[in-house]
Length: 390
Image (cartoon, rainbow, N blue to C red):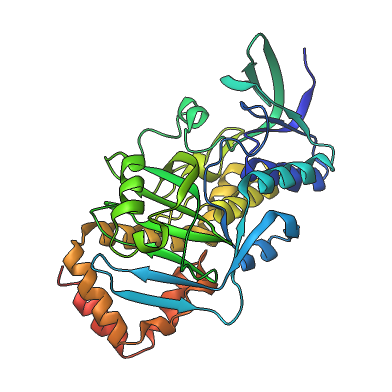
């Protein structure tokens, strides 16, 4: 029989490795299971991460991981109207996701975290004070025991379903590509394109890597995202002028949970966090910083050793992120309900009312903070009145 570890983590992605790093620093004995052969594969997101979010978590990725630094975003309406938001200094890192994941893995390894690759957890068994799992590799089957388990396996939610924590949730099909041969792309700005023709109920994006390369992607509900991405690259009236002749170097499809977190994050000594718990921003589909915050809260609740650790995790998460997620979920529902013509009208109104002064880039993770300064401005009620007509 294998030894019992304090904490077993499923998934060696960024949230899993950050959970392992956080727990091992607190003195917990940690073991991580990953079904793939190494961290960082397959790639699941374009690596657009707020600098403030990383610094608040004491994460300082090395320069060789950072592909670009961005200080603004250009939003385009379906008809091509533009809103530009800009900070005085870079507020976002564009990181190489594979190298970023490996860096977090190496950080955790330096604190004696034990990783097991090519091994998938399929069965859970809840005992009195511990949890037993069965891990399956290509030619082997093994058993592991733990006092606590954090499920950070990603959007599949396989184990969370087995634990009875997920019944149904909404996923959109996302895809992003690395492309070469872009032109006239401002390296200081990410670009976001709205419109149902290319990305129904979500958006398309272009993130410059520097030089002639960029990351381009989109997500779509109930449509083939790869076909839509190729159409966007070649046919979008504005984007195609910058990326229409670019070569696709690599392509990464990935599901994105966008309807907000699952109702309950724990069952006995099984906790779920990150994409597994749908702790992904409904507005943008980004989940790295919110996932890091979530696993940190979960680990700290475990470390404190109280019997109500699960309730503490849930309550602290709600206090830290709950209201922001409620706001983002409502914003996503509103955006999904608006036809393209309404979005164009909103851009027109927003432009006239100087909404570009809003501190968007510095509030990417806590987006409710955007509403507070705007609510004090006289024009905010005009916008609310306009939106309520739809």
